[in-house]
Amino acid sequence: MNDNLIRNVTSLANGHWLSILNRLGVDIHYNKAQPCPNCGGYDRFTFDDLEGRGTYVCRGCGSGDGLSLVAKVHSVNARGAALMVAPYVGLSIGHKVNTAALESSKRKAEQAKVQEALKLTAKQAKAATRALCTLKTCKPALASNIYLQAKQVQPFDTFELANTLYLYGDHKMDIGSLVVPVFNPQLAGLQFIKPNGEKHILAGTRLKGGFYPLSGKDSNQVYIGEGFATCAAVSECVPNALVLCAFSAGNLINVALAVRKSRPKADVVIIADNDESGTGEREAIKAALAVNGVYIMPPAAREVA
Ligand SMILES: [Zn+2]
Image 1 (spheres, rainbow, N blue to C red):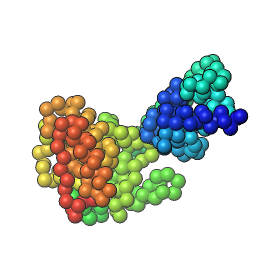
Image 2 (tube, protein in one colour):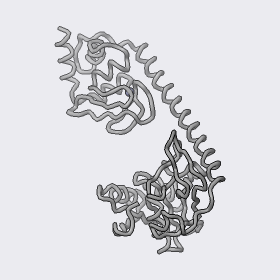
Image 3 (cartoon, rainbow, N blue to C red):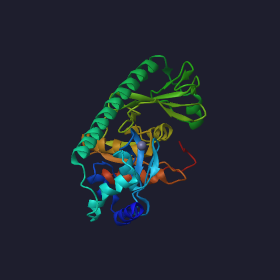
Image 4 (cartoon, rainbow, N blue to C red):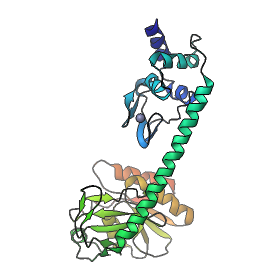
């Protein structure tokens, strides 16, 4: 009997799990890195709903199907979960949903979300402070910096490490690593580029919307690119434009939208990274479309940073 109930519920729920889960107080979205409704976190959980089975993957508490998620979040076994889901798939055999428990679990989820947000804010504040302290120990980067020389670009007021720095645990940043500040809009963190081109972001840096302006020029011609070296190469070609480094392909659109907001009339040009995966170009097109701008893609030979 039990097996039948679980089988019937899962088969009837197939293809409807997102709405069922949402109605059972499991606040999740489709195909997006997000906090786990069971074990929290920030982006550890993805609801991919394979074959309509309500499947999910969590780096904290594992993966499973829609029914197992209901069971986890509401701390019931599979049969208990099936009983909770039954009313939403038109089965009257299910027990009435315990609304008090539902409310309490919803409240718990809300509280967890607030806690996570507070933790993140604290982490970001710490990163900003650490960035400032680190910058004080750096020296201005010169054109003779190994990475800049390899890329044949100017330093544009970036810095370089005067001492070896251990980022997290034993992760070593060599002397001479290039240090690019991340502004958002105040100093929010740092990007380190080792002489061999390896890039690292200071943990906790608020990167979404973060940027580094390669010139202080107030221009209505704005170029936004991904890597520092690409941006530097472009900046040397268009010295009168404002060039912003956005650090990642996915962040191009955030920086572009902020620019559009503050400069409604600016010509916005997105510089696409010519990477093999095509991510650079795809994200550049997205950003250009979002702000009614254009995109360019330098040849791969010059720079794949
Ligand atoms: Zn989890």
